[in-house]
Image (tube, rainbow, N blue to C red; front, top):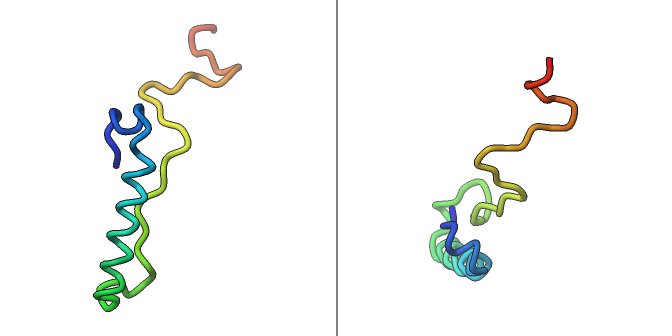
Length: 63
């Protein structure tokens, strides 16, 4: 949910924090809209790949 530019240049944590503040304010003003739990922005992925490298020992080129 973050642009590559913001992640690469280190802006994503500040944006994440700002989104959390907005969700907290929305929850405080209208808790009836959030019946299950306090809203949280999505967590950051730990790893992201365009083309995930193959695991060791699973080379499909050898046969």
